[in-house]
Image (cartoon, one colour):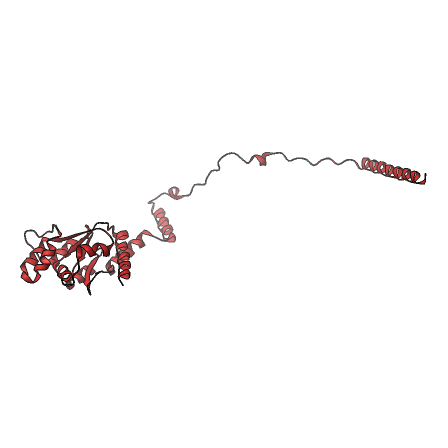
Length: 245
């Protein structure tokens, strides 16, 4: 089961790598609910998270998350100690702290420019993040961390991007024809130039044809044949005389 989970996580990470430019070290933005769930299920976040995501990570949180954990008292004291070990990212609520869920949502709402992964157990925050593109979501189920599959919003956005990049050939020709009709482009700009042949003509094609050898007159041929017959007759006669002797 562990190997299957890692293969699924690898596919999800590849999706965000190639379509949204996520790079190592991955930045994991955690809230108090995730820290509390990890403490309850005895999950060592710093050790297990890099193994699960198969890469270097930076664990981080915000001042709003820490303020909320302080206000909740002793019940979340352990989660507060865990969150205090992480890097603190600046949010827009330094003077007027907000709730952790609202703060984390604001960190990733505008196209998630810093490429954060959000780790939370907050159901309301989870539902809101699933409606956003470009935001990987991590939560804990049955003592294990789970990287959620890309949201329908992310998949739809990537599909639209690929559709715009790969326009069929016949549509490209139609667009080009319309541009030429409207005078936006010149026809000569898109006409294919004929390739010029390098070098001169084939030297063999320039050679003169050789004429056929002239035939000898028929009378000369007849004379040669008669001479040959006489020689053959003479040789046969001499052979007979020698045989008689």
